[in-house]
Length: 221
Image (cartoon, rainbow, N blue to C red; front, side):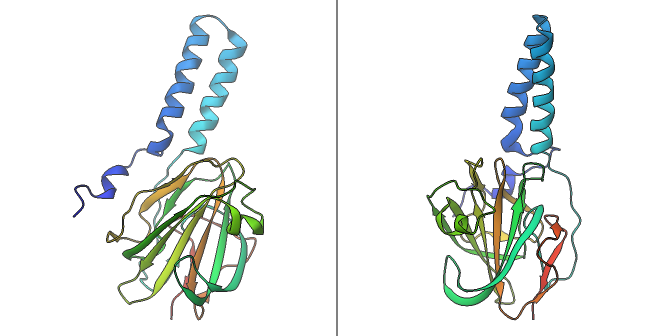
């Protein structure tokens, strides 16, 4: 039995916990440069601090109360919606929805559907640009298999990118998760692939901008 609930790692503050060290270090350097009257360096460091703070921002989100819908696990742009024959956990025809996060998007990831975590799978790999189709096959990634209370299975895969070098996923196998709650993040731009049942009613299109925990991706049947 686990000694600690993963939610203890995600107490809400305006910034993702993983980004606090970066923000503090950058702010400290800004202060030092200002004290030493290195004006140009102080301004550069200040701008960098603001950019880092913007990247690691973690706003509150309000999602739908409809239990038959799947919400986006991340902010970003939908780059593909396609039928595939398998997921990282099992062979079964389903629809894969891919969301690309630029460095300007919120990078905290959220649970797309309430249920129980049935599996976790981490795979080492390359760091190709996450918007390339090859990234799904070759990049470092972490997948989480969630089984809804209705028995429906969905899989969400965090895929590292060209700049992203750290995938964070807090839940463990057996955890009960709630749609819209925070469960991890990927540092500095990447993508998430969501595998949903083949007969799902897809509610978004390629090119749409989606918001983690709020935008409905599909309706389950």
